Length: 372
Ligand SMILES: *Cc1c(COP(=O)(O)O)cnc(C)c1O
Figure 1 (cartoon, helix red, strand yellow):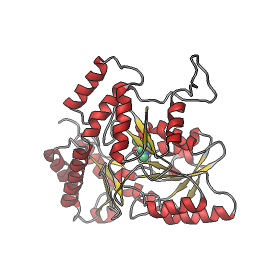
Figure 2 (cartoon, rainbow, N blue to C red):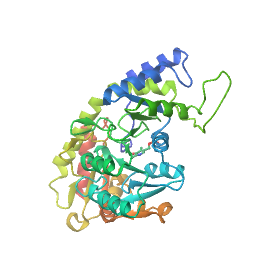
Figure 3 (cartoon, rainbow, N blue to C red):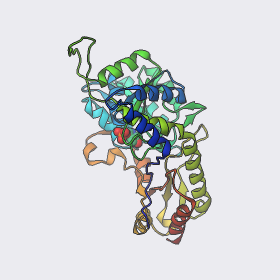
């Protein structure tokens, strides 16, 4: 049996055609018309002024934080329940993440904990330099209260929408809620360029600065002239061609992932001890990954037994993110709350959710879980 992956890339004839077209046009490196077009089409898709194509989502996070003013010694509020890249980018700048627990009703950063933390810090004159939100597993954070808080205290928000391309919050696209938004096109995201990222913003100035810093901060002279420390963070033109083709298929991918999510719910939702990541009524996720909680007392076996049973049939599933405040590398970091994400990690399992997952494979997965 072929291995079933959690969220493998899905590419087809259109990706191949556009990649070869870019190749044959001789725009191999590094920038070119496909990068420009990808940025334009991407900005249009999420209805924002500017998009800057970068080599990874992590690079986009790094630049976004730098551009909102995060620097050495600063503190930045970051959700604990996320992929490590969110916090790593804070550390690249010599700043420190302060982890905030998630809400059990959205699995995203808890606005009430953010409110309490900011209030306390304002009283002691220790406000963080920035707040980072993550739109987890394709569901956006709860932006109304979060934006009101950031505005109240004058703190910029950076939105890590790496997992949430195509998701909406109150009808508005993920990525549009901060001073800058960040997307990833790595191999397991909803669209992929094999590797890549995008920084989006409504500020022309911020976008221009991002492009400048991403191309080694080259000043406009015939020779190489530099007045800032830059990075080599741009996306290759060949990969941008793949991204353009992928973007055209985004809506059908969301439809397929939603259908997969509904099938899992229909097949497993009634089982004692199994529950799903809640879908908040404030938006529409892109259903990047379907995640369940397995309560061992009610279900009979725990998450690991299910994961290993799937693995024995060559099916990849994965525990939900291990909260960053529990990671050895962040053992000394501050954390606000923490028990909610810790308990989700105890019981959480991400199920195969790729847009190319067929119904027969889906049934097989469901049967294996039911047999436990
Ligand atoms: C994937 C991901 C990233 C990193 O993106 P890369 O393109 O792999 O660098 C950052 N944050 C979150 C939440 C992610 O899921």
